[in-house]
Image (tube, rainbow, N blue to C red; front, side, top):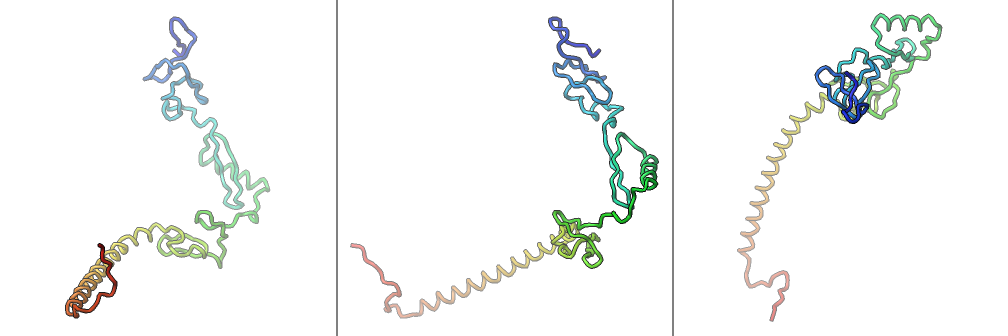
Length: 197
């Protein structure tokens, strides 16, 4: 069924081998897993539900004792992962002294979390270095969401203060205007006026 082409050019293009498609594609894709031919729409492992989609996949198993990463290929189960770690422990390459120290989880921070340089956030319970101990410094999710209502309250309080200020300013201007009417009108203005002829 993968053979394709037209009557004039029988070797040109191939039909998609997806069960519902069978589209004649002039630039077909061959799946690396199942070795079948597919069109652009069905070329991904997920779209044609390839049974061998993990043939080239790589997975890294990290040793908890020494923090070394062990690369494996293909799909491995939990039992196989435990067997790989056990083999690593017995090989003599597993040294607890090589374990990497934890670092601060804040982006671009490389601070090592030691006993004296560690702070635990009270709102999100994340361990960070002392530079990022405040919720605003480590983008604390709970602090950001809890500060929104208080910001709204502050804005409404600001609005009240603004209204009071504007009311006081208006009353002051009205009083000043009243005083200026009571002045002697024969006094010269403070700024000289220029007459145009």
